[in-house]
Amino acid sequence: MKYIKVAGVVVFLLLWQLAGQINPGIYSSPTLVVTEIVRLFTEGGLLGLVFGTVATMLLGWAFAAVIGVFTGFLIGRYRLASLVLEPYLVALYSVPLIAVVPLLVIWFGIGQTFLLATIVVATGIMLVFPTAAGTRETVRVYDQVARAYCVSGRHFLFKVLLPGALPFIATGMRISVQRALMAVIVGQFLVGHPGLGTLLSDARVRLDADEVFAVALVALAVGAALTALVGWADRTLSAWRPEVTS
Amino acid sequence: MTLAHGKTAAPTRLAALTGPGPVRDWTIRVAAFCALLLAWQLAAQNVSVAVLPTPRRVWEGMAGLLERGDLQLAWGQTAVQVAAGMLLSAVFGVVLGVLIGWFKPVDDAISPLLNAVFLMPRIALVPLIALWFGLQDTAKIALILSFSFFEIFFTVRNGVKTIENEFVEVAKAYCIPQWTVLRKVVLPAITPYVMTGLRLGLVYALVGVVLGGFFLESNGIGGLIYALGSDFRTAELIAALFTVMLVGLAVNLGLHRLENLLAPWKVTR
Image: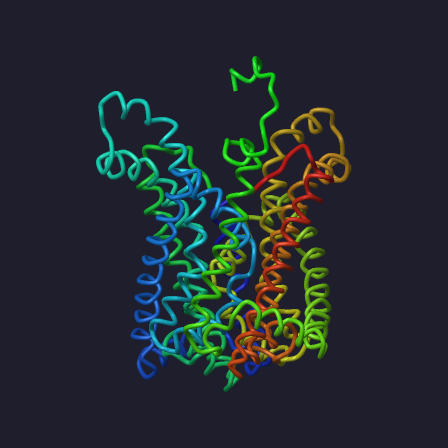
């Protein structure tokens, strides 16, 4: 089976190289793209742009997680909060939130704050429902035990509820990582904040095939690396509770 | 609940409002909504209209957009682009999903490549799409395709892979030809997955068309939002955003209903 997978990739690369020999202006080719990526590394400061983008993404994602987890905890723990907030949260969950980015430009300008706000708006909602489900489940399972041992207040929150909900939160992080990355790239693309997004806007203006493919592949590598990392974290955190899915 | 059997007196209206039950729940929700509107109004009075217009100004903005026909034009263009993109991704997604899910060697050969593209933030395809298709409608349709195809394809492919074990063994035991199994067993069994895939696909198509309006030719609802934002016409911008929310919500809820109607026996995701 493994051979077929490798063969598929090899055949694809060969076909691409062949297409590139015929019309490099449209298809580029694997060798040209690798050369271009090396050039972006040495001359274009690719590494700095990628790290800056990922750092911004992680920071915004952390904010999104704090806000999303807090909201999810509120609606999972308190019926009143769930009554009041849940209709709006359900609505926000199913709409294309990326559309509000122009409004965020008006509110937050075009700097780092704007990028963080974009990530929070795009991904915060994805943490809410997993956290709420985790909170409800933990309360259901451990509430009586905790009461019997007189564990309450802050202790219950940090020693019971949070660890209990953690695998659910990790799942929420896993399903939101792609969105967080897209949000930061869209933000940079829209306002010209240096990063992966500006690589995209440069490539769109110049329409140089090598650059276009190189940038897309770099984005792919970043996306794949982040997904792998978060998947690993999710598995580690959920190791003692394998039944949690989405 | 347990005491309810012995209850004879009908609850008074006041009791219905204060006691637990759906009436009280809705009272709380409506009150919260009014509080939200009030908070918006109060916040808007203290800042510039370009930052946060009052609810009333947004309402007037909506009326203005409708009167001039901006919204109708934008949504008309968007609907055409989404319809074309969805048609293509539905056909390709379902057909490829079934074939690749069914023939394991093909799955092994192609899936690593498709998985890789699935992990890429699809917005990174914008320059490539601009290079190949320009900035006009064709490019937008390609962008929509890149957003919605994978949702449909992966949902259907995973569906085909899951049902394989359940029904196909029986069909194989009765020596039914492969194509007949595909038609008579697999296709009916994957209906719920197809429906789920189409719903997710349409939701992502909306994301794609909005981003297409931002980064490709500036038309459709994405273009309108972008233009309103650049002109700091915030009231109309918020009004336009509300229509996006409304459409997104309607698409999701409507297709959820349809899903339950057409394939009530199994609902995924």
